[in-house]
Length: 483
Image 1: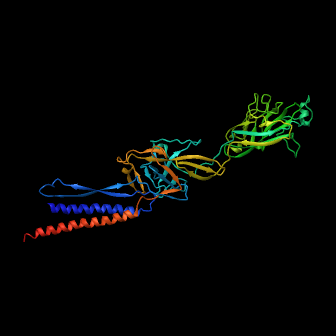
Image 2: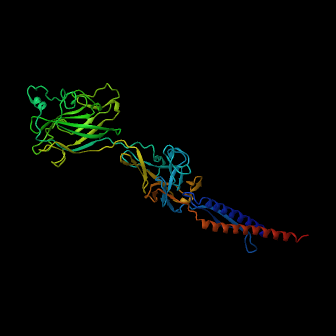
Image 3: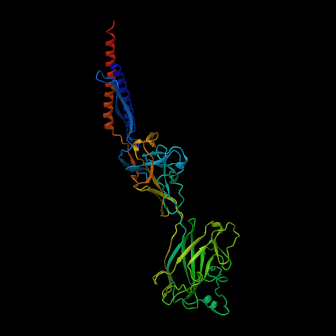
């Protein structure tokens, strides 16, 4: 029985060392595989119950596979901003198709961060696995959930719409010359009844002024402000001022340039947005109490309604809409004409009329220029108009026992009872490591160690085979006792 057990122990040794050779071979073959984690085989002795004082029965050896997923590989720099490496714990969450991970079969976890955009802009690695992350809302806020895959979406870096922000605020520094004298049109307007050629915001306006035809009244001072609409298009609004015969007051109109950008309701000429008076205090500052250009009481806000679906539709009296052909949504613009300093904003001093500066928020349409990913996994898109905004955040999965994951094709792993349930974390929090862009994690295989193990395994295999040949020779000697 002991000889038979020796033969079986030798066979077990051959089997165990064959497994070890397979693991070493796989390691050597993947020495250049990005994010590969070295595999190994652990040996465990077997003892049979028949072993005792009267004899010994060899139990042999058994082998178990081991995945050293928690080992950190060295990092190497690349030129691609979407190449990602994790420094510390955590795995990238991926799927085999670019869909919501909660709607597909098996979610896979990997450290292979060689992500590149596919033809549709989705980031996938060299194994064809698609990267998942938390999307950002329109304000750049990340909608994360640490336990639910349904909060994740595949990361796409090409179908990001151009960054657009409509103008909502406009400020200006300008001076209207206090020494300006009232012209003929303003003087005629002050007469009772009004004289020939008198200024009138509806019948003889500054908005309608055409130097070629002589129609309308030429303003004494015009201030232009560029604005962005809801689609990122650029437009110009103009404040026209005409000195009146009343001290410290100017006739005023706000118009669109060109006037065809606006559809005006009754009480306004085409292109007009607002009409009234702009008044100043004796110290040259803006007098909003007696200013009627923005209503009574004065509220320096311009409201432009959405483009009507039907071109024949006319806005209400005194209201304006964007032209039907522009297809724009409604827009409200607050005018900052009277800052705290009396020497800024819209003023009236005894100096030439001049626009010192205009400032508006909002951004025109911009095409995607580049994508950057920081150490916390935030994905930031930069557009050709100079605007940058967050579009998402890469999610990292951590496990109670990461070495308990089960390896699958594509240098990735799936969750098992031994690994425990995953937790989704942002990079740099919740035990997850940080992310390095333009960097890849190298294989954890050490060739010198693998070649050493290869020699040791070969010798162990040879020794196990020697056990079998020796036991076989002893069996032959036993059989030869009987002739």
